[in-house]
Length: 616
Image (cartoon, rainbow, N blue to C red):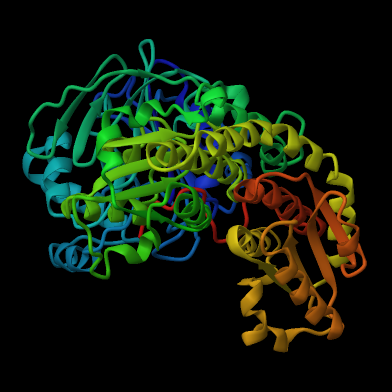
């Protein structure tokens, strides 16, 4: 869950590493550190400087301020704690006993206790509580016998169980960085007489757009002028250099106070990008190039299992309703972290669809691999081109939503919902969906970006409503059918961003328990567009009102009836029922944002969370 940056070249490395860590802070912000290695004017190896701090990157920046540090090699790390509390001792980079070998690690070493006990018996002394430090000492143990850093890293990793994105340097070989990955993303950046490594391309876009993605069980040796890649059995690997299309400006705030707000307001554009070139409105069709090579297999699929975690799983639940109602395919939605710990029944007529913004979500990736082992057709909906899920699925669809920096997902969710609508159109027209229905879905989908712009104009109103409820301790979010999942998502956003306890429920289940909580201090938020379950939702509102509960409603424009029941109403434009979640979630995102801001919370980096969960 942590972020890694590495640089080797001919420029001062400290500021390059610091800049990279700032762009990776969404991956972790418990503590951070940088090691700078100076390989010049040294007869017996490199000299080094280490900077560490607890808390956000700005604390590290203060620690570094005014430091004049020679050195054109650096590795840096921003941490999201898994083993050991945030502290200077637990901050990366970690070293071996003699401070010759330094590592930055993202992942979890599952057998670290066994390895640590063995190493302590060999005389190694440990300085932190982390599992990661074991790697530095394990590499040191092999290096003491062969004095070859690359070989020592390779042999050490052969003994490791778990996940790692790893960068290693040594004062004894101060002309290279050794990097490796297994289950944790790493990308090489290829420059002119300089090279980079990072957990995410956003960290290196200032310097190069040429990248090479490492795959699992690959190890690379990076110098200032070249790189080589092998597998853990020492077999060479040929890799293609890819060109990143994102600009660094896409990763900046553009005048918004937070990335989260910027990304909420980007949704008309991000959805347009997700739909661009994919809708054939006059024929009621969706053109999905990423699925063309499996078109006939999809025609014969009898069941779809959607896997995802968090917000992606809620998107999948909406997709389940879409696909079953309009494409006529049975669909199940599984939480990625649970999928492989039961015994899923899968055959060759089952498609498993993995949804992940980053394409690196560890639990979803492992669910995907389990599905592959059982013979399923594997598909993906991911935002990051070249990510692990994108590479390991047979086929899939990219979101093209652009980089999402805020930890709480906003534009990625609405992009996922839009792609699921496209997939429904694609599969439905393969089966029994009529031309008329296909055209109607396509036409309504095309109008969604403009309708979101109408909702965003209510930003000021939503801000005022949030201010009214900012001291609430609890919230109940209620929806039915397509918007049941959006109730779950709305509650999740409020928890993530404002630290207020919230529960998402099916409105029909409210009277089976949760209604006992309702009083004048326990508000409810109903998602109540005029759809096939509108009257049912209204019944639930009546029950809450009768018990003195405060009500916020998300309603269809022109609905005056609901205004007589709800204390506050936020209106959304009318659209096809299956597409209402794309609209109804926008006010919930803004509500959560302003609730968090009103409490003084850094909504881009909520406590205890990281953007991409790359460990189980």
